[in-house]
Amino acid sequence: MTPKGKLREDMLTIGRNARTAADALRSIPGEQRSAGISAMARHLRVSTPAILAANAKDVAAATRLVDRLRLDGSRVEAMAASLDIIAALPDHIGEEMARWTPPSGLDISRIRTPIGVIGMIYESRPNVTADAAALCLRSANVVILRPGSEAFASCQAIDAALQAGLAEAGLPPHVVQLVPTPDRDAVGLLLEGLDGAIELIIPRGGAPLVERVTRESRVPTLGHLEGLCHTYVHASADPAMAVEIVANAKMRRTSVCGATETLLIDRAVAPSLLPRIAKALGECELRGDDEARAIVPMAQATEADWSTEYLAPILAVRTVAGLDEAIAHIRRYGTGHTEAIIAADEAAALTFLTQVDAAIVIHNASTQFADGREFGFGGEIGIATGKLHARGPVGPDQLTSFKYVVRGGGRARP
Image (cartoon, rainbow, N blue to C red; front, side, top):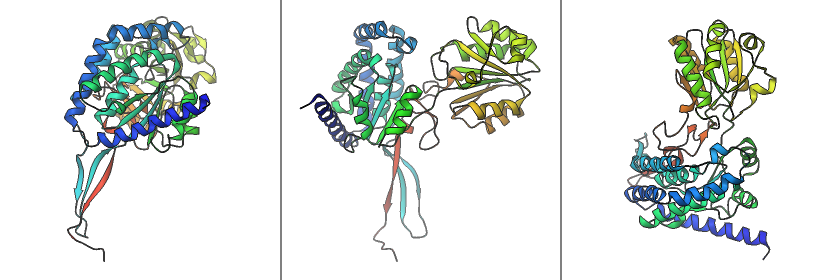
């Protein structure tokens, strides 16, 4: 058998095992799934030295997005803590979402169900391995994980801990499967659906990955565009609040998708407020329009800067006449991820929150709150920027579907 032929057969075996595990998981009670997630958290903590040793190899070979890739003891503990939260979330599988009786006299209920088998294709972030596994298990889904080659050793070490937790809880090992090769052809096979085994593909990574998945997948996808997030400082903004929020939104972690990439500021307050914001941003490189540059020395912004997700300490700055111009800029350049307004004027804030079409809109808080943990989901598989099935942080409830259960009492349709 050729190497490509063997890879195909190995991937089809993963798909068959996933389908068998999904059938079994439907009858496993929520309490046992919770126990499995808790056990996975414990084994992550026990396996911290092995995970960090594997991560050090990945980091040494990395050439980009090293901050996303790097783990330390506190980040592994954060992964485990997220799993503890997910384990404690209520189990909604099998719940009755609605029930009614139409004129026919039928008793109809809508029942929450798992999706089935989910394929997760992701880059750079080792923590996605644990988050995706726990969130899928919480929602009674099976997951096939395909990390990027840059995080492969880290994800293998994390997966070993997760498998130990599944075994401790008596759960089928194939409810979580890590594709055992960084071969890029494995991605293509996942996108084909593994002979019908996969019911949903979720990509998490840069634009090239998401575009490839959207273009090539034969399976429904739940994706996201780039996190080109804006923070708009309205003329009514409290100055101290604006300075603190903008600095946090950009510089807390520049490599996350919720980091602000463009600052919009009303020209009425720009002369007094922009210098204070620039000072708070520290070493951040600013690229501004002519009015911003006349207030604070900075590089000239180009057209490309308004549509760039930097994921770095770089911020585009544009002065605007007011609310309408800020919203128009966001409509033109935004990617539908997260947009924020800083304003004391409640009417202006309400207009912004109503008219800006994004998965997350924020008033008087940092865009870096765009995170499933901050939303109380324990973690997230990603931030969905589409409008079908799920939008915003994808937690356990967003990984479910439903079915209709109809009780007829012997009725035949006339």
